[in-house]
Image 1: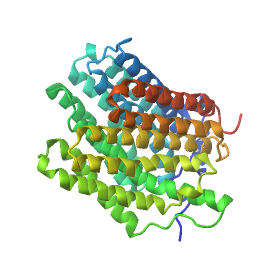
Image 2: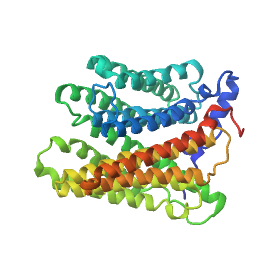
Image 3: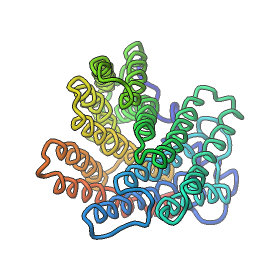
Image 4: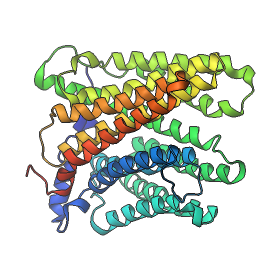
Length: 416
């Protein structure tokens, strides 16, 4: 047995969305005809802007009228700004395929997007707004997204995907906690790791479907042979250990140092099992197609993050722990979301499910960004220089997506 193809499992490669759009007889601009279009495009543009602004802010050449300090603003907007945009685009694309219900399009989609935009403005100008108002405004979008996703999934009795809504709810909770901790303590001790852990758990759940699914589909078309193994006890134990390790990692800042060896062991075990899980998906056989090896590369940063955090916990080393966070945020979240955005954009705009050097280059740029941020932790004399390298690579990757995929997202379905 092998994993079912992506159209059976996650809805990022089939025509269910297209069928709904055609049945609705949608008119108007293409950008609000499918959920991924505005969120992927605006999310990528924002990924460029937020890192470019953050770099100039850190280097002292510009400022933002935000009530958050530079590092907190950067972390908040990476996770709750860009991250939520990528997640919304994915969910609004996948849920109609999961539920066989009509997609959110037109004015309702525009309304959701407006809530996301207002949240970004509120955070950027939070120096002029009281913290409570800022928090309420920024929470409006995730709460609306949760309401929409819950309505569709419950309405279709698609119970197996309620866990995804649960993870989004944890993200919204982390955002509320982030603002509360910033107001009380000046730093999101639990809010930031909780948000990171929720995203990593989503990658484990969703990546556990799409990575082997995309691999199977690709190999069936091009090179039959060794394909991903069907999900079995390795997958189950990898998910159980990863879930437990993420919970322990989130609680780590408030636990006594005596717990460090236990937390380290949990994280290393989760990293080993997650890596073993991915090896069973035949990543070495996907190097001929960027759309497939890209999702593998993004997922590979998940076990890397577990192993780094595990070693950091065993050594009680906060510097190494910081490196692990960048493996997860820049590497796993950045590359996984970008890989899904490219694949979904091609699939749902009628393009062939194959990509060339341009797409491969933006994947490699994100990998360079993650590597530079990790290495910078170990080379304090080069921290600023490597942060600049990472920022430039990140900006280049998402600017490449905007240039290469933006026209697809703004045009009607089908090649121009």
